[in-house]
Amino acid sequence: MPCETISNREAVQMMARCKEEIKNLRAQIERLKPKADAYDNLAIVLKLHIRRPNSAFINAVIAERFRQIEQEGWSIDHDDGHLLPRQSMSVGEDLVWVLDKRMRELAEASASEVSDDR
Image 1 (cartoon, rainbow, N blue to C red):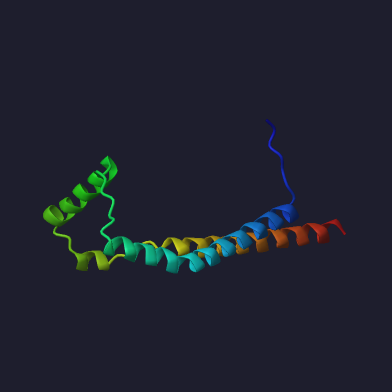
Image 2 (cartoon, rainbow, N blue to C red):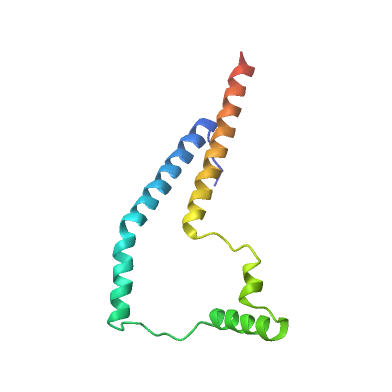
């Protein structure tokens, strides 16, 4: 199957649509958050916790954390000295920033191509 190429203008339009979709999804998450929090609180009050066995991955993470504490002597204070990844909402914000940056680059490249053709 041949790979189709798109123009810079089409790429910018696609990125703009992605950016708007991210913003819309973030707004929807904000609107739904109070309901999710209320459900979580209700589940706690009604003791509706669903218990499942841990996956092999989760068991490996727990074992590694115990190793870090017991063998390396790490603590919460040690952990606080490291930067942790931002929450997933911030990842969406970072993606919007990347899209904006790339859209500007493509727009500048398109403008340059137009001026070179003259």
